[in-house]
Amino acid sequence: MNHDEAPDRGGFTRRALLGTAGAGLLAGAGAGVAGAVALDRGPGGTPAAAPGGALGAARVAFHGEHQAGILDPQQARVQLAAFDLAEGAGRDGLRALLKRWTGAAERLTAGEPAEEFENQVALDAGPCSLTLTVGFGAALFDKAGLADRRPAALEPLPAFPADALDPARGDGDLFVQIGADDALVAVHALRVLQRLAAGTAALRWQTAGFARTPGATARPVTGRNLMGQIDGTNNPKPTEDGFAAKVFCAAGGDQPAWLAGGSYLVYRRIRMLLDSWEALPVDRQERVIGRRKADGAPLSAPPGAAEHTPVDLAAQGPDGALAIPADAHVRVAAPAANGGAAMLRRGFSYHDGLLPDGAPDAGLLFLAFQTDPRKGFTPVQRKLSRGDGLSRFLRHEAGGLYAVPPGVPAGGYLGQQLLEG
Image (cartoon, rainbow, N blue to C red; front, side, top):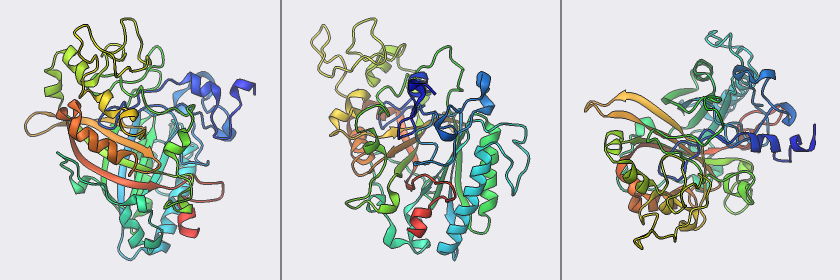
């Protein structure tokens, strides 16, 4: 292994960080498709892709300091679901379930058949970069007799203006994010987890999403959302100072020791009003976002600038007006405008056909990992809901908040730090 390939203590490799530009990361807390935070998590930190780059053979290690599916390159497909713990299951039932899920995840992420409930749907597929990420909802702690270990930051999110959240499609005791580069692999993994949960936890809701398939573009670029915008330029990068402190918890204050190395996940199902958006001329769409649609460059940048040209919020146009309008998404969502609040967004698009009025039921499955939602998502979303021009084209229809435990060491199981700490 040469110097450029040597992983640091966080498991990153210089090759991975430079070689994966991402499949699109959310530009702000309101909308967008989050994509690859480049991290190659093969066994022992070595590159995960098979010789020849075969998509199906790419493997993400299940064990590690943090759960897989947070820092790993975004896959093409995702299954999101939440389960509710059965009455009487208690702490022992939860522990047994998480051990069953851990064993299944170890095998499935290695491309091996599940020992139980193997339906052979994905039998001829490789691991396809499969990841399984689990989070705990607030109600789980009472049901499992763990109320004294519920994190203070897991308090319910406040209501935001224009929220129209359907509780039947959000919340839940156990959240699962299953990503893979093959839809059958992701669906199969969810089905295995669901059958392993029978009698202990019941499926509350389920939804599917997608992102750009790796290799679909001639060169790695930040992806586009269903509004057609290059999206995710300002997502925090693992190479930035203080990155881990924005995403992963550390014991201290009101953060419990069992969550050290874990994170908080905010989920929102955000429908995009695509018919209204597509009726706008392109130049008006660009002013709503604050970036050029063709190349993602900020409106404050001169011609020929690129996506990663720094945003100049003070820049003025020839007429003396702000080059980036006062209600532009990039201005309202900027960390500088929100006390430095930042989140790691990893969302996926969804398209579930048409609503009764003929409008597309399509948009964003917003996923944001952060150290503390009280200092991340909540203040940013409060500001966006009041002053972001993009909010006129969005509807928040479901959501949830979950504590994501740290990664699983070899020989351990999901949530062990909570249940046995």
